Image 1 (cartoon, rainbow, N blue to C red):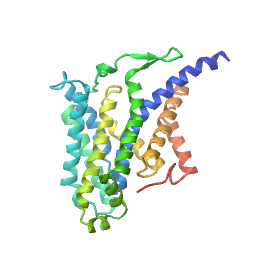
Image 2: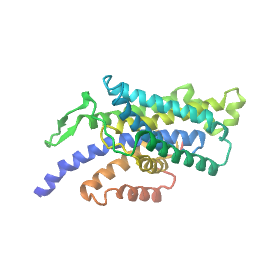
Image 3: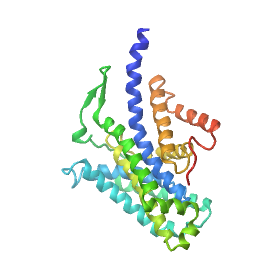
Image 4: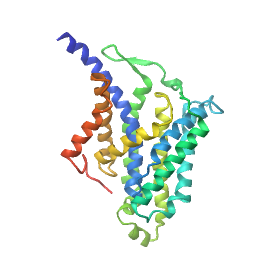
Length: 297
């Protein structure tokens, strides 16, 4: 009985850690879901933008923005990733929207490999790290007496805010409603005089910004290294499928399932913890092949 009582505080702390991990998974996955839902592009470069966002955060922090604070560092990294997304859309994807999915997959896979090599050439192969932002250093003591970092608490509180802002953009703004209409019938949207190419462009840029933002937010809590692009990409695609294409709340629920199950599994069995979320995801897809919530695109 005593062992159960001693285990419960650790479980509660681990769930909170899983919630902070959920924030990163959700932000990256919902960006991928927007691009896949509206443009019908399985954007494999999304993981690359996440990795580049993290490396840019490190670079900007150690150069001219070091004394400006993490907010300006993160904003600078996100803007650069957003510019990359704009250039990719206007320079490459704009002429491929009507091509078949296999060609788009091959194109984005080629860019994924190119970005990986360019990242290695520009930033090197050494592990990088970014200190926790000054306002979020330290920790709070949970009721069980276990410390929980302020930065992780910030990530937990950020999740509903990001979800609400994205929901408001998609459901309540003119730009979001046009994007939804273009996802369903791009020819009809074009027929009423709306430039569908620019609709696709701003949706793609928003998706890229979310991918880069995930890299910015994860940089103070993990080692920044090559290969982090592929790891997050697999998780993000799986979350998009589980949650329902384009469904913001479905993506959030799937991220919660994925993040918390991985965190709890790591506590129970560290050597198998990484496998458990995929087992849970498989069970969900067997029971609900169309995802937890319906696709809205």
